[in-house]
Amino acid sequence: MSAVAGHGVTDVHAHLLMPALHAEVERRVPDEVQAAADLELRRNGLASLQASGRMIGERFPRLTSVEARLAAMDAQGVDRQWVSPSPNHFYPWANEGLATWTTGEANRLIAEHVAAAPDRLVGLGTVPLQHPHLVVDALDDAVLGRGLAGVEISSFAGDVELSDDRLEPFWARAAELRAVVFLHPFGCSLDERLDRFYLSNTVGQPTENAVALSHLIFAGVLDRHPGLRLVAAHGGGYLPTAIGRSDRAWKVGVGSVVMKNWEPFVPSGWPVIALRRRPALAMASL
Image (cartoon, rainbow, N blue to C red; front, side):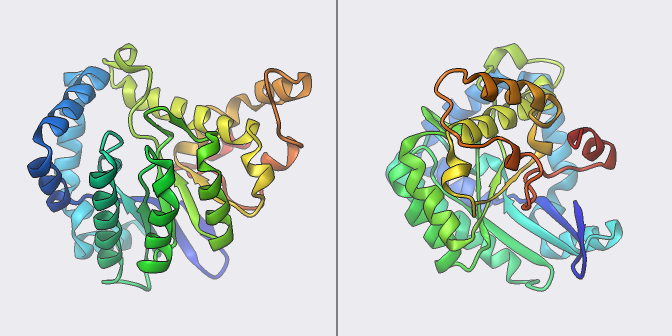
């Protein structure tokens, strides 16, 4: 969360759970949903999934009800929230037809939710990252069609990394629209190595953030689109606390580093990281 002069406290990391959307996806493609659930079990482990299930169950009203959300915001002293889809609604395995429908429906439901309290809630939609040729249309639907402030994306989807050349039109369009792009991972490619001790979340999420941001920086995406409004959840993962290693890699020209300049991306004028607690902010600024 952050406090901006004249705007009070803004929480940029808040989600909307959409049970009806997921129920329809399950009705349309039950086998694919089951396969995704099996993957989640393999990646997270049963104990971690049970812990997450209890946590979500306890918070279900705040994840679905505008009234419960606003009451929680009041109790926490939060003036405004950016509301984005719960990452389980990314459906990175969905085919083109299903992905087009799920992103459009998610964007519609987010817009409907925040419209109930437009002075306090700001909406972020989503795009089908696994289908790069569809993401610009989905971004336009979110921002121009639904009036949302931007979109939420994962750290990767299938074989699509954020440095993928096929996403270049998306970054250009996002910068042109001055749309917020909120980076929030869903799952970690380390899979079974993190299947116990809740490592899929405590280690997997910051790992994915660090990898995704590094793809963006070293591929020169931020050079080519300096107006890009990128916000990363979880403090940018491990990247801020190990920034010296990336700095060294750039200076010695490891691999195919194509970015022009490293320094501007550390003290960026636009907030790049989103954190929950003050000690984490102190660590990320080291």
